[in-house]
Amino acid sequence: MTPLHETRGPAETSSRAPGNTLRLLALVGFSALACALWFFRASHAGARFSFLFWNLFLAWVPWFVSMALQRARWSFWPLATVWLAFFPNAPYLLTDLVHLKPRDGAPLMFDVLLFAAFALAGCALGWDSLFAVHRELHRRWGATRSSLAVALCVLLTGAGVFLGRFERLNSWELFTGPLDVLETAFTSLRQPHAMVFSFAFAGLVGIGYVFTRPGSVGFETR
Image 1 (cartoon, rainbow, N blue to C red):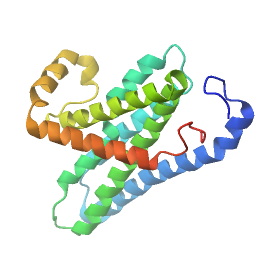
Image 2 (image 1 turned 90 degrees about the horizontal axis):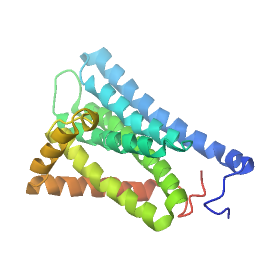
Image 3 (image 1 turned 90 degrees about the vertical axis):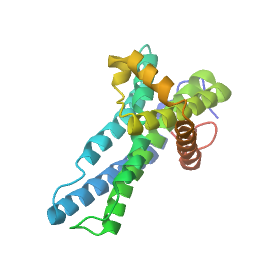
Protein backbone atom coordinates (compact mmCIF):
# COMPACT_ATOMS: atom_id res chain seq x y z
CA MET A 1 0.00 0.00 0.00
CA THR A 2 1.29 3.46 -0.88
CA PRO A 3 1.85 5.58 2.25
CA LEU A 4 -0.60 8.43 2.62
CA HIS A 5 2.10 11.06 2.53
CA GLU A 6 3.45 9.98 -0.84
CA THR A 7 2.21 11.40 -4.11
CA ARG A 8 0.00 9.08 -6.10
CA GLY A 9 1.64 7.98 -9.29
CA PRO A 10 0.27 7.95 -12.84
CA ALA A 11 -0.39 4.20 -12.81
CA GLU A 12 -2.46 4.45 -9.65
CA THR A 13 -4.46 7.37 -10.99
CA SER A 14 -5.22 5.68 -14.28
CA SER A 15 -6.28 2.45 -12.61
CA ARG A 16 -8.87 4.31 -10.58
CA ALA A 17 -10.15 6.52 -13.39
CA PRO A 18 -12.94 4.14 -14.54
CA GLY A 19 -14.42 4.07 -11.05
CA ASN A 20 -14.33 7.86 -10.80
CA THR A 21 -15.96 8.17 -14.22
CA LEU A 22 -18.73 5.78 -13.25
CA ARG A 23 -19.45 7.73 -10.06
CA LEU A 24 -19.57 11.00 -12.02
CA LEU A 25 -21.94 9.47 -14.56
CA ALA A 26 -24.18 8.31 -11.71
CA LEU A 27 -24.26 11.82 -10.23
CA VAL A 28 -25.07 13.36 -13.60
CA GLY A 29 -27.68 10.67 -14.15
CA PHE A 30 -29.38 11.45 -10.84
CA SER A 31 -29.61 15.14 -11.74
CA ALA A 32 -30.71 14.44 -15.31
CA LEU A 33 -33.47 12.10 -14.14
CA ALA A 34 -34.71 14.66 -11.63
CA CYS A 35 -34.78 17.41 -14.25
CA ALA A 36 -36.48 15.13 -16.80
CA LEU A 37 -39.24 14.35 -14.30
CA TRP A 38 -39.73 18.07 -13.68
CA PHE A 39 -40.08 18.83 -17.40
CA PHE A 40 -42.43 15.89 -17.89
CA ARG A 41 -44.63 17.19 -15.09
CA ALA A 42 -44.46 20.74 -16.44
CA SER A 43 -45.59 19.61 -19.89
CA HIS A 44 -48.67 17.93 -18.47
CA ALA A 45 -49.59 19.99 -15.41
CA GLY A 46 -47.86 23.33 -15.80
CA ALA A 47 -44.57 24.60 -14.44
CA ARG A 48 -44.29 24.35 -10.67
CA PHE A 49 -41.46 23.84 -8.20
CA SER A 50 -38.89 25.72 -10.28
CA PHE A 51 -36.95 26.33 -7.05
CA LEU A 52 -35.80 22.71 -7.28
CA PHE A 53 -33.43 23.67 -10.11
CA TRP A 54 -31.81 26.38 -8.01
CA ASN A 55 -31.48 24.05 -5.04
CA LEU A 56 -29.96 21.36 -7.25
CA PHE A 57 -27.47 23.88 -8.64
CA LEU A 58 -26.47 24.81 -5.09
CA ALA A 59 -25.98 21.11 -4.34
CA TRP A 60 -23.46 20.90 -7.18
CA VAL A 61 -21.43 23.84 -5.81
CA PRO A 62 -19.80 21.94 -2.90
CA TRP A 63 -19.13 19.00 -5.21
CA PHE A 64 -17.18 21.18 -7.65
CA VAL A 65 -15.33 22.84 -4.77
CA SER A 66 -14.39 19.43 -3.35
CA MET A 67 -12.96 18.45 -6.72
CA ALA A 68 -10.87 21.63 -6.76
CA LEU A 69 -9.61 20.84 -3.25
CA GLN A 70 -7.86 17.76 -4.58
CA ARG A 71 -5.54 19.95 -6.64
CA ALA A 72 -5.24 22.86 -4.22
CA ARG A 73 -2.10 23.80 -2.33
CA TRP A 74 -2.00 27.27 -0.79
CA SER A 75 -5.72 27.72 -1.54
CA PHE A 76 -6.78 24.52 0.25
CA TRP A 77 -8.13 26.12 3.42
CA PRO A 78 -9.97 29.01 1.71
CA LEU A 79 -11.61 26.46 -0.59
CA ALA A 80 -12.37 24.18 2.36
CA THR A 81 -14.14 27.10 4.05
CA VAL A 82 -16.24 27.72 0.94
CA TRP A 83 -17.01 24.01 0.74
CA LEU A 84 -18.18 23.88 4.36
CA ALA A 85 -20.38 26.95 3.86
CA PHE A 86 -22.13 25.44 0.83
CA PHE A 87 -22.11 21.77 1.80
CA PRO A 88 -25.48 21.87 3.65
CA ASN A 89 -27.14 22.82 0.35
CA ALA A 90 -26.68 19.27 -0.90
CA PRO A 91 -28.69 17.36 1.74
CA TYR A 92 -30.98 20.39 2.08
CA LEU A 93 -32.91 19.05 -0.92
CA LEU A 94 -34.37 16.45 1.42
CA THR A 95 -36.29 19.17 3.21
CA ASP A 96 -38.05 20.16 -0.01
CA LEU A 97 -40.27 17.15 0.66
CA VAL A 98 -42.19 19.55 2.89
CA HIS A 99 -43.87 20.84 -0.27
CA LEU A 100 -45.55 17.50 -0.97
CA LYS A 101 -49.34 17.56 -0.93
CA PRO A 102 -52.14 16.55 -3.31
CA ARG A 103 -52.45 18.96 -6.23
CA ASP A 104 -54.60 19.09 -9.33
CA GLY A 105 -52.94 18.09 -12.56
CA ALA A 106 -50.49 15.49 -11.30
CA PRO A 107 -50.83 12.38 -9.12
CA LEU A 108 -49.36 12.73 -5.66
CA MET A 109 -47.18 9.66 -6.22
CA PHE A 110 -45.58 11.31 -9.23
CA ASP A 111 -44.69 14.32 -7.11
CA VAL A 112 -43.26 11.94 -4.51
CA LEU A 113 -41.02 10.48 -7.23
CA LEU A 114 -40.08 13.96 -8.45
CA PHE A 115 -39.06 15.29 -5.04
CA ALA A 116 -37.34 12.03 -4.14
CA ALA A 117 -35.24 12.23 -7.31
CA PHE A 118 -34.05 15.74 -6.45
CA ALA A 119 -33.46 14.78 -2.82
CA LEU A 120 -31.41 11.71 -3.71
CA ALA A 121 -29.42 13.70 -6.26
CA GLY A 122 -28.56 16.22 -3.55
CA CYS A 123 -27.60 13.53 -1.05
CA ALA A 124 -25.44 11.71 -3.59
CA LEU A 125 -23.61 14.93 -4.45
CA GLY A 126 -23.15 15.71 -0.78
CA TRP A 127 -21.81 12.30 0.18
CA ASP A 128 -19.44 12.20 -2.79
CA SER A 129 -18.06 15.65 -2.00
CA LEU A 130 -17.72 14.73 1.68
CA PHE A 131 -15.75 11.66 0.66
CA ALA A 132 -13.38 13.81 -1.42
CA VAL A 133 -12.83 16.22 1.46
CA HIS A 134 -12.40 13.37 3.95
CA ARG A 135 -9.77 11.78 1.74
CA GLU A 136 -7.77 15.00 1.49
CA LEU A 137 -7.95 15.59 5.23
CA HIS A 138 -6.92 11.98 5.80
CA ARG A 139 -3.88 12.53 3.63
CA ARG A 140 -2.93 15.70 5.51
CA TRP A 141 -3.93 14.83 9.08
CA GLY A 142 -4.24 11.08 9.33
CA ALA A 143 -7.20 8.87 10.20
CA THR A 144 -8.20 10.12 13.65
CA ARG A 145 -8.12 13.87 13.16
CA SER A 146 -9.68 13.69 9.70
CA SER A 147 -12.54 11.55 11.01
CA LEU A 148 -13.17 13.99 13.87
CA ALA A 149 -13.16 16.88 11.40
CA VAL A 150 -15.68 15.12 9.18
CA ALA A 151 -17.90 14.39 12.19
CA LEU A 152 -17.80 18.10 13.09
CA CYS A 153 -18.68 19.03 9.50
CA VAL A 154 -21.67 16.70 9.61
CA LEU A 155 -22.89 18.22 12.89
CA LEU A 156 -22.56 21.72 11.46
CA THR A 157 -24.46 20.56 8.40
CA GLY A 158 -27.43 19.57 10.56
CA ALA A 159 -27.44 23.05 12.08
CA GLY A 160 -26.96 24.65 8.66
CA VAL A 161 -29.94 22.85 7.17
CA PHE A 162 -32.11 23.91 10.10
CA LEU A 163 -31.06 27.54 9.65
CA GLY A 164 -31.68 27.34 5.93
CA ARG A 165 -35.11 25.74 6.15
CA PHE A 166 -36.56 27.47 9.21
CA GLU A 167 -34.62 30.75 9.41
CA ARG A 168 -34.26 31.09 5.62
CA LEU A 169 -30.55 31.83 5.80
CA ASN A 170 -28.37 31.35 2.72
CA SER A 171 -24.80 30.09 2.49
CA TRP A 172 -23.41 33.32 1.06
CA GLU A 173 -24.68 35.23 4.08
CA LEU A 174 -21.80 33.63 6.00
CA PHE A 175 -19.56 35.89 3.91
CA THR A 176 -21.80 38.95 3.46
CA GLY A 177 -23.16 39.12 7.02
CA PRO A 178 -21.36 36.66 9.28
CA LEU A 179 -22.27 38.46 12.50
CA ASP A 180 -25.98 38.39 11.64
CA VAL A 181 -25.74 34.68 10.88
CA LEU A 182 -24.01 34.00 14.20
CA GLU A 183 -26.62 36.01 16.09
CA THR A 184 -29.48 34.15 14.41
CA ALA A 185 -27.80 30.79 14.95
CA PHE A 186 -27.10 31.52 18.62
CA THR A 187 -30.72 32.52 19.19
CA SER A 188 -32.53 29.80 17.24
CA LEU A 189 -30.29 26.77 17.79
CA ARG A 190 -30.78 26.95 21.56
CA GLN A 191 -34.42 25.93 21.14
CA PRO A 192 -35.11 22.23 21.88
CA HIS A 193 -36.81 21.59 18.54
CA ALA A 194 -33.85 23.13 16.73
CA MET A 195 -31.38 20.91 18.54
CA VAL A 196 -33.45 17.79 17.92
CA PHE A 197 -33.80 18.56 14.23
CA SER A 198 -30.12 19.47 13.81
CA PHE A 199 -28.80 16.34 15.53
CA ALA A 200 -31.30 14.08 13.77
CA PHE A 201 -30.51 15.52 10.37
CA ALA A 202 -26.78 15.32 11.07
CA GLY A 203 -27.29 11.68 12.01
CA LEU A 204 -29.05 11.01 8.73
CA VAL A 205 -26.23 12.64 6.75
CA GLY A 206 -23.51 10.90 8.76
CA ILE A 207 -25.03 7.43 8.63
CA GLY A 208 -25.72 7.82 4.92
CA TYR A 209 -22.11 8.83 4.35
CA VAL A 210 -20.77 5.83 6.24
CA PHE A 211 -23.04 3.53 4.26
CA THR A 212 -22.30 4.97 0.82
CA ARG A 213 -18.60 5.80 1.24
CA PRO A 214 -16.55 3.75 -1.20
CA GLY A 215 -13.34 2.02 -0.27
CA SER A 216 -11.60 1.31 2.99
CA VAL A 217 -10.13 3.43 5.75
CA GLY A 218 -7.07 3.94 3.57
CA PHE A 219 -9.11 5.54 0.78
CA GLU A 220 -7.71 3.19 -1.80
CA THR A 221 -10.48 3.50 -4.36
CA ARG A 222 -9.74 6.97 -5.75
